Image 1 (tube, rainbow, N blue to C red):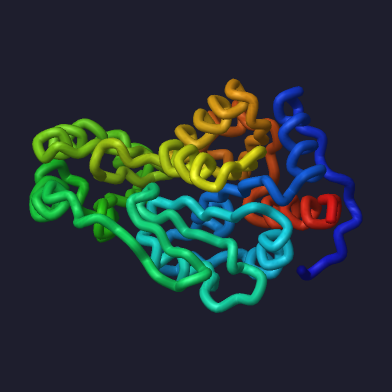
Image 2 (cartoon, rainbow, N blue to C red; image 1 turned 135 degrees about the horizontal axis):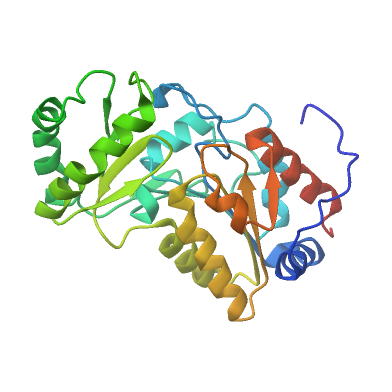
Length: 283
């Protein structure tokens, strides 16, 4: 990492969060670290194809991963894209890293370098074919951008003249389009994603935590798509598995900050927190 960790660990604002963080640092070898990618490990940028992990993310993850049961990057992106933009492949220390792409529909394991995935939902191609005409019809073609995601398709409004107004105007027509093709709409930070139902970060996180027998869980995210993962951690806490919720702070999304145990200042803050966790975790 770029700087030596000297600050103490933050104090979560809830007792459940304090218990979760304490369990993680006292017995890290049974902990699952779950992390969103965009806005959490990588700064948000106008062009999603230019997103890259914070420069200190890989070094700190390589220091943390050998101490814990697993590190899972859970993202709406294709797994291969997240691996490439994150720089996760072939890194010593990251053998326990997995990337759960497309909200868990795809899985890349650092130990093997292989991706496993089911076939895409047929509704994605059908909806994608209709999107250009729909955007033109509602007057939203200028400044919007369609992102192909394989298992999903997304419409970004960040480049529009009025990004929020364009986002708001598209919610109803995109919901209608999704419904006709047996899909759902997932809103994010100036992006609306059409994807199959039953795929979300909460399902992915919960299933993976059960698979590895995690005895504590930390999850960090920044967007509306991370709310199901927060809910999964809260459910695990009810079942006796300690957990801590981290919000990679954003003025665009307040729902996570209001629900989080710890709020940090974007990817820089996430990397700092993970570095502190390395420093204070039991050997």
